[in-house]
Length: 115
Ligand code: HEC
Image (tube, rainbow, N blue to C red; front, side, top):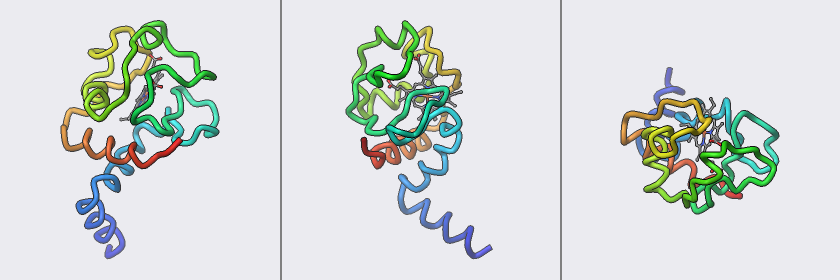
């Protein structure tokens, strides 16, 4: 299993690599390119720095439409801790990532997905 060991070593060195693996659980609902096609959730290309509910072609929940959040590392960390806590009424049915290091890694990965 030298291959897997190498991936794990790389993942430890670079949080964005670990974040990409963790993102597999988000990828069921989110594309990371603007033309990634319609999924359950909006695409996340360029999400860091983006205003909440700003993908015009996506029909957000009323709660998210009103949220008025700018997605920074800090607000994404809050969101990924508990989506329904930050935005009560959101339709993102995801309980959250309980481990701070996992949230950090996913956010590091999200910073690499450009619009
Ligand atoms: C079961 C499907 C599902 C999963 C899994 C999921 N999401 Fe979502 N996500 C959604 C939906 C649906 C919305 C839109 C919520 C709304 O309109 O209230 C959303 C919204 C978001 C937003 C806000 C986007 C915007 O344009 O304002 C971010 C950021 C986000 N998700 C990140 C993630 C990350 C990171 C993960 C993995 C840790 C994840 N999501 C897992 C369905 C999902």
